[in-house]
Image (cartoon, rainbow, N blue to C red):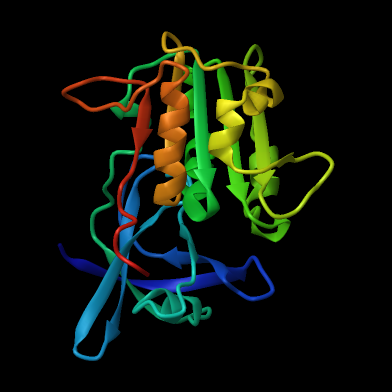
Length: 252
């Protein structure tokens, strides 16, 4: 896989500790599907260290945008977080990944369930708008520890919803409380029905489709909870209702 030369246009730290950072990058990668990711890389010593990062921007946006947490001991994320406007960064020539609407059959309900920085691809999906041709009811669930980590909340609250469709953004906090926010972790909230009641939608294998993105423990536990509702992982050879992305194995 080749590399393009990108330039950082904007940097945003979401938390005081700067543990969660977004970069907007000017790089001509061409077309992609909402939900896909791209590799970013920097020269470290005599090699280019690269990692995949989901694209937050919709395809129509001329600038790429990524959102990541900083792993202090990681070989790449601390260096990416240190970049400023005008700095160069390598960008992979081809976006890829299967957390896209075309990978799963249609239904009336779409659930986009994320923890932490896993919300990034879902921002791209809901701001693109193409999902409304396939789904009538969309729910975005974002689970984090602290309120400051609810990145892109304003953008997710301001989604343009066509007439006759329904949409809800449902943030969750596991270590803080807020009056208008669910408390706890996502999997238990599915298992005991709190999430469904807050969303005013249930999980039905016939019409519900779920995308999961986040830390592996959340994804694994959420799949167990969703199995209790009759939903199962989607694979091309064995179609189901739950689509996940797996690229969390390498530390940042």
